Length: 248
Image (cartoon, rainbow, N blue to C red; front, side, top):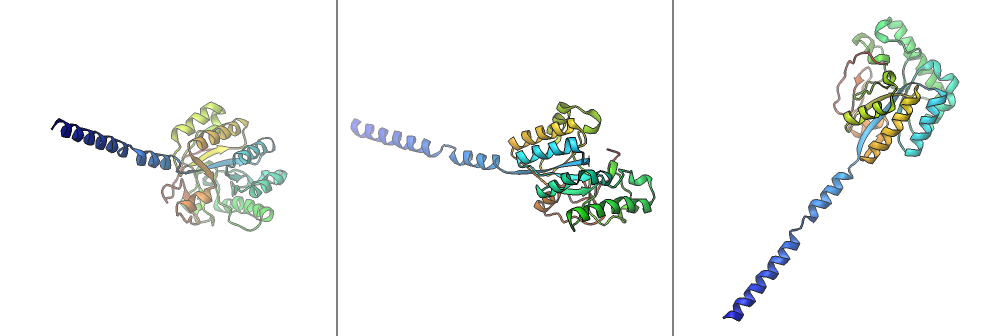
C-alpha cells in the first residue's frame, strides 16, 4: 500500500512539474517583442529655409540617420541655394511652398496671396520638375476665402517647440519628446543652428523608441488620407482642417 501511495505521489509531482513548464509566459514575451518592434511614423518639417550654413548640415545629419523630412521653402531664398533644394529631392525629402516673401496671408489681399504662392510654385516646378508642392502658410494662418485660392493641400503642425523663439537645444528637444506621438507633424526651422542641433537629437531619440521619419505626404498615405486642395491639415491622426494661431 505504501509503495502504491509513493508511486502515485511521484506521478503527481511529475505532472505538476510538466504543467509548470508548459504554463510559462513564452507567448506573452513574444507578443511584447512584436509590439515593441512596431514602427511608429512621424513627420519632421522645416520652415524658412533653405539657408546654406544650416540646411546643408541638417541634410548631412538626416542622410546619416536615414531620416526623411519635409521642407517648406521661402521662394526668394531658393535661387542662391538651388543645390540644396536639388539635394532635398534627390535624397527623398518632400519639398513644399512657404510663399515667396514669408508674408502673413491673412494680412494681404487675395491677389497678393495668389502671387506669393504662385511665384514660389513656379520656381519649384522649373527647378525640380512638375509636381504638387504642398503649402505651409506663414504663421499658420489662412482664411476661408484664401483657402479657395490655393490649389495645393496645406500643412500645419501638431507639435511646436517654438524653436524659432527659444533658441535652446535642450529645451526644444525636451518639448518635442514630451508631446510627440505617432502620426504627429513636428514644426522646426532649419534657419537656426540650434534648431538643426535639436532636430538631429530628436531623430536619434525617437528612432531609439521605434519611430520612423517619413515625409508628410508619406505619412498621409500610410494613414489612408487623400489630402484635398485648399484644406489645411494639422496631423495624420484625423482628416480634419484646422486654423492655428500665429507662428513663425
